[in-house]
Image 1 (tube, rainbow, N blue to C red):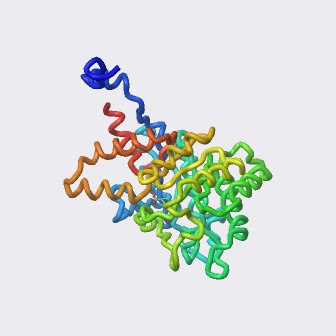
Image 2 (spheres, rainbow, N blue to C red):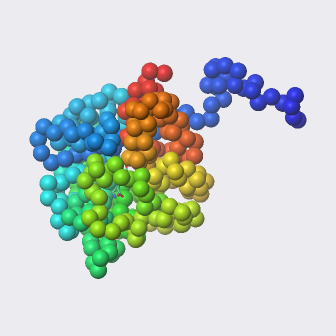
Image 3 (cartoon, rainbow, N blue to C red):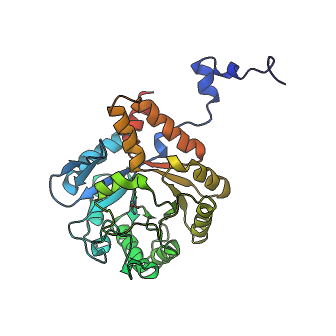
Length: 325
Ligand code: PBG
């Protein structure tokens, strides 16, 4: 059948029918909200390159957590900015580290927030790389032990899920083994599986104060040009027992999200990263785009591509809009 018998516009006639045939619907349940926690007291620092995103000291976390609960957002992912950095990122796996204390604080405040932690070294190392440096590069196998210690320490503090973002080979297996040995076999791992060496992380590195002090991350994060390799990374992580796999960034990588969704049986998460957020905020400030519409279109696209979960700095803005609807 074809035109004039067939008319696609019939199903777009008014908002009632459009609502009925809509294929993708965003829900507040889809969102994971990133929070930056910094050492010190009474701090709420706006991140200059990320309008509306703040670094909070632990004593000020309550206002952020209350707002999240109020909006019905179920989950947060934590990033820490420690007071001291060293070559081995020792505050990452200290039981008195910034993240460990932040987790305990959040768990004291509420049982309504599912706490995920980013497991990586770059916020804690003096050189800003995601692991131990040996011969001017990150040493994979030496880094694995530290990542496992970091994950255990987060879970001991009360983390509900750990999310390794370092891109070392074998880290999911190593962390799974460590968790199981310590009696944490019930704690899931969400692996940053297809994490690309992206320029879209720029504003995050301001927020987390984690820019590499020399070189770049290209010897461990993926080449943005590689599509099949992303699937290989995902498959390796699933073989190592990842419970959820992640694609990062999201918007410039919708093809990867779609590939992954079609090839795995575990939930797929996408990280709508800092640069993707800041571009919208900046353009909206200039009056060049409609902030809310562009935000919702982006988040819908990420979900349409196949993401079951979206880590996004827009979580609060989007939750407010969904609530009004
Ligand atoms: C840590 C980490 C990064 C992001 C999340 N975890 C930065 C990086 O790899 O340099 C980026 C998130 C964002 O840009 O929003 N390795």
